[in-house]
Every structure is written in structure tokens, then in C-alpha cells.
Length: 187
Image 1 (cartoon, rainbow, N blue to C red):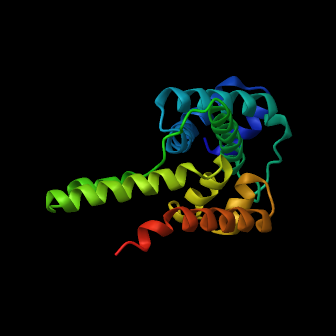
Image 2: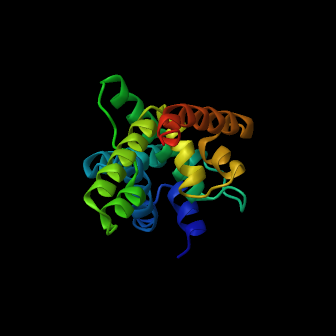
């Protein structure tokens, strides 16, 4: 059975159809949440909350080719993830920043101990710079530059205007430039 039929049946109250939607989309939603929280338990909580909200609100979903269930679910997940990151920030916790690519390059390089030390320091500066972004700026930055999403798709996923996305990207880049400028200017 395809998503379209499962959605129609789930809207009519069929729990098996909704369970099938969970089986088909749950892993992707978990990966989205984990990518930004870097915590398995937080990602599991966000996954659960995403599907609870989807279950409660599936009757509001318009079923047509332009409104994809996966996009609707992604939006719910990202909103919960942003809320979660905001709550963490208020509690003065530092969220883990996605630097896996940079850190893998640093750790796998065959450089001298001095080069490795400098690379580690650069990685820490990048980590600190990304941590200085607001949760929404960080999320949009990741969506744009790590996931290579275009402005229009980011705006649709976050349910905001394209100009709002561009503003967040511009502010994030400005903040990153300012934070990382001392590294670039070192002799």
C-alpha cells in the first residue's frame, strides 16, 4: 500500500494505516532529530512527539500531490527540534554541533603533532563559532550548507518566507565571519 492510501485511511481513523506511515517515515524523522541534537534519547523524544502531533492533526492534512506527507512530517519534526534546542539554550547547556566532517579530516590526517594541534584548535574555533548561532540560524545554516537544500525548500520546511530564510543565513554568515576572522588573519 502506498503513502497516499495510508494517509486517507489514517485520516479515517485506521490505526494500522498510521502505524504503516510510522514504519515508513520513523527512521528518517529520527535521523533529522539526531542530526541536530546529537543525542539518541533527545532524538527519540522528538520522534515520539512528532508522531503524536501528526496523529492528532492528520485530519488537517490536505491530500494532494503538492502537499507531501513527508514534508508535513519534516516540518513538525524540525519545529519540535527547534523548540528542544531553544529549551536547552535557556538552560545554559551547550548543544553538540555537527562538525563530524571537519573532525574526521583532522583526526585522519597524517600530519605532524604541531599540525594536528593546530587543526584541533581550528576545529574548536569552528565548533565555538557554530555554537554562537541561535538554534534557528544553526538549523538553517546546516540545511543550506550541509544538506544543500535550496532557499525555497528550507522556507517550505520551516513554514516561513524565503526572505526570512535569507535573513537568517545572512546573519549566521556574518556572525561566523566575525567569530572566525581571527583565525583567518593569523600569519
